[in-house]
Length: 268
Image (cartoon, rainbow, N blue to C red; front, side):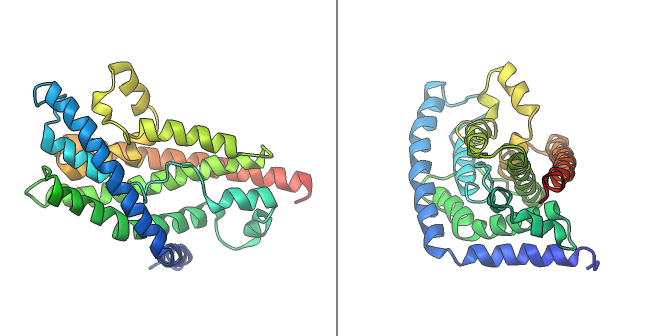
């Protein structure tokens, strides 16, 4: 591994290990995932049945895959906008981060991604397994969707961490950024496809969602892993994710530089 990348790999591993210490919280998250998963099954299955067993390409099996994969990703996709950086900006500790010989943005995102990847073990995989065993779901029979889906999921996690980083940088200009985080949580969950698949949105709302990074965090990985979207269409979704990863990274970089100048102007 390149010496320049090694510190960020270590931060990724540190985030993974840090999250692994919260075993009871992970179990509580799994219980919550399962509970709301069964509630979504009751509501969305009734909707599909009322539509005659097929709704915008979703039958019961495909809908079950959407439900349980989306529930499994709740612990890994940051839809709350909360990161440790927000507190460090508020109390001024971020000034110390700027003195370290690493990139603040990359370090924060690497740590958050490490935490998110661990959450797949106690929450993500068991949630999907529970849905497959108890309810049943439609999943691909070939390895290609799973391989591309794994990459798509990793990029989705990274996009969510990079976007949450942007939300945290608002603290450079606002005394209290919790209001922005709450607004982010409401908007991101809906447009990411947490409550209903984006394919069920009206056309104008689907266009709005596609113009944001939120589907790249959750909906696109679900579509790829579940096999609802395959071939060139799946590659198109993955390309869109990479595009949003670049956009959120550039915006975060610009806000970091501007925030650092503001700290220096204020004497931080």
